[in-house]
Image (cartoon, rainbow, N blue to C red; front, side):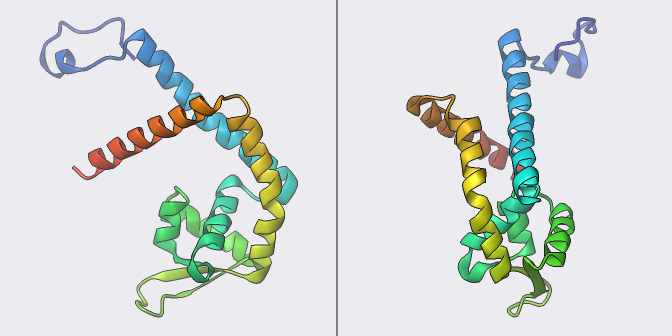
Amino acid sequence: MNPKNSHSGKGAESQTRWLNDEEKDTFFTLMALIIEVDRSLDKQLNRNAGLSHFGYTALARLSEAENRQLRMSELASTANGSLSRLSQVIAKLEKKGWVTRSADPDDGRYTVATLTDAGYDKVVATAPGHVEQVQKVLFDPLTKSQVQQVHTIGQRILRRIKELDSE
């Protein structure tokens, strides 16, 4: 991420904080990690439960919510996806009878997603295989200390992203 043929150093070009070799390697490793963990979890969930990782995450978040329901905007945020992506996934989950959507009784401008009993049963049946895959992929290769470090580092990066997003 440091072009070999840089300009004379004038203007904005001279203010660019290029990544050094260690930062570049770390960045590419982190990007690969994010992609590969999601791919591995997605593959296991598709194979064993007929669900995408994002779809399972939406169901799991609903299963933990009060009355098993959340506004779609809140669910999108807690599932780490866009509202449009969530809407597409929820439509598929509705067809399977696992989720319903309705107007928010407190404010009709919002839509509420509710996990059905069949959806809850699906989460309960799917969770053991999913958790086993998470253990294999994320936690088995790490020591307890490394798990704590990953958590601390992840929280620090997430806080920084939120700070920058609020500027």
